[in-house]
Length: 243
Image (cartoon, rainbow, N blue to C red):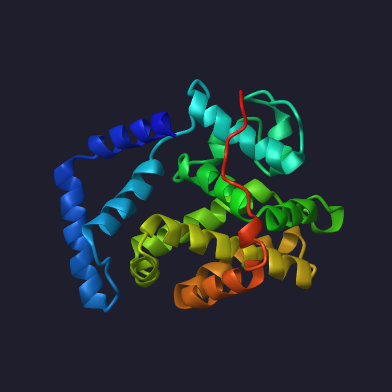
């Protein structure tokens, strides 16, 4: 991931040290005024800004690392043995809205795909179940788009300081936002499957999750850990496929 990190650090640098410093001060100030927990260390603050920097890096089909991430997601979900083309209607199979996944990544950049790849690697059986459910005609939904919406919600919580307590507890802001994203994705799946929801329920489900997570982040993360405890020991590494 060294090339990817280089890209992210460049984006990070382009934001300007002064801007980031001021943002950290403002975050602490308003967090204190709201009574919202703040990140306990400078390392956690740096991780938080790193996450937002990644979210500003757009998908570049000429970047080998970006292509590996996208191909890994596609192959791990579909089981295909060979890489798919960079552009084409095949992306709709895993839930993107068109031939170019980049059009769905506005506001999330490469952080969206990285979270989906993380989820597939960390919780492979859950990811497989979600993909399977998304393909059932009666309950079909765009898995990739749902994943991106969960990422957006998790980033919003991180920005608002609502993941600070969890980040302080586990010692990493990156995994705190990954935990929240994964918890939201799992909860979406549970609601969709248990209540036999259909595509007409999508907007209301998304709205409910956005409101629920703001007050129940810890509950959602506990549900994630409880429901996936048996999978943790056998989870695969988050590796890319070879090009």
